Image 1 (tube, helix red, strand yellow):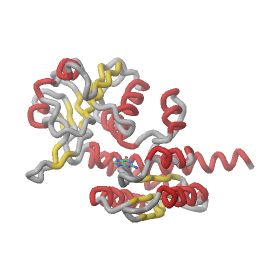
Image 2 (cartoon, protein in one colour):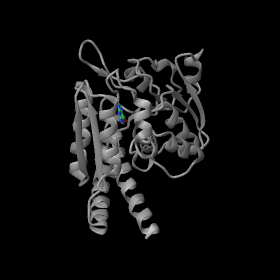
Image 3 (cartoon, helix red, strand yellow):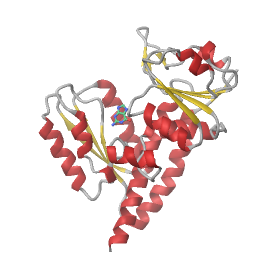
Image 4 (cartoon, helix red, strand yellow):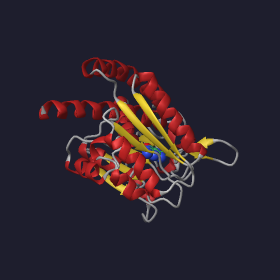
Length: 289
Ligand code: GUN
């Protein structure tokens, strides 16, 4: 049976470390790191995510600034809140919770967030920094995946890594990070011809497709590390990942559960990103004085 990679426990440890670093920052800077969170509309899942993120901020000493707009908010209203957060010196990170209501255009809004406050790492400037290996904001979920692989002692250098899913939020940045770690990376997606064959060659599988239990256990190579980013609610109420957990854990050396794997790490990495944004902000202030 595979070793279970406990994301809940690792996130707890990370929050404990962060609490210390946040308090050190607050003492030196004279103010805490701040995260501006903007939720548009009443999507229940997004409301839960946002509440979790804000609670986690509070627990480690990061100040969160909550902004809520109604379902029928206009593009201009969202822009106004972003501009306000961009200009606020107490805000070091900004998070625009996705998905937005269908009548809004997310792309120009994400572009409007100052790259130096883009705690999610979605701005094309930060995507570019990641691609060329400069220190920057990196999307939280892929950061969580790499952290879990490292904490499980998985050798990434030279490993065959297969990322299933090509989203801007998870698949593409996860592939960049694995590449930076020295893995040989393949990105598979809905048009990939023989997914089973690709997955079967992988020492590391990162599944981020959003299709419940799509990756079959029989596809997994003996001894592989499996990181399951999927969170899918079935009709019977069960929460499952993108990997068939039971069968995969018979072959993998280590595997993340759903829930309790990658999920808690995303929030912990958002806190870390916010703190690091605040540190970079203080450093740049010092340089310009
Ligand atoms: N919606 C689902 N995941 C995310 C995320 O990581 N960041 C934001 N802003 N919205 C999301």
